[in-house]
Length: 115
Figure 1 (spheres, helix red, strand yellow):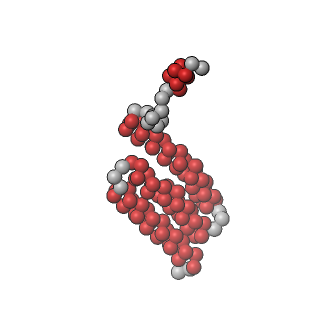
Figure 2 (cartoon, rainbow, N blue to C red):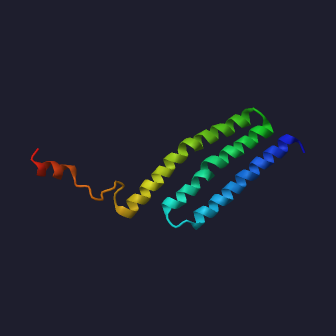
Figure 3 (cartoon, rainbow, N blue to C red):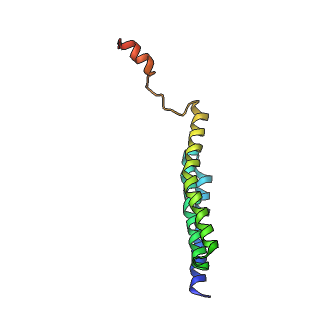
């Protein structure tokens, strides 16, 4: 076994362990907001580890570039999807995504102050 192969295997093993631990976190947590914290390592850190393993194993060739391009797309899309998930969960729970606790409508406030 070459050092490259061992390094790639270790990186892949760490990625698998990370996904398994994060999956357990998703299963154990009670609500959507808590679960979403455990999805981030699965969607960002694990793909970077896999891409690093591909880079170590294959060197800088076309498949490596394609792998890093896919990781870049996932890195950009992950936070957007997380935000959309949280917003949808909040709308489902409260009917609106904005926090309305103790806030009066701006139109009512101006009308009552005589301005």
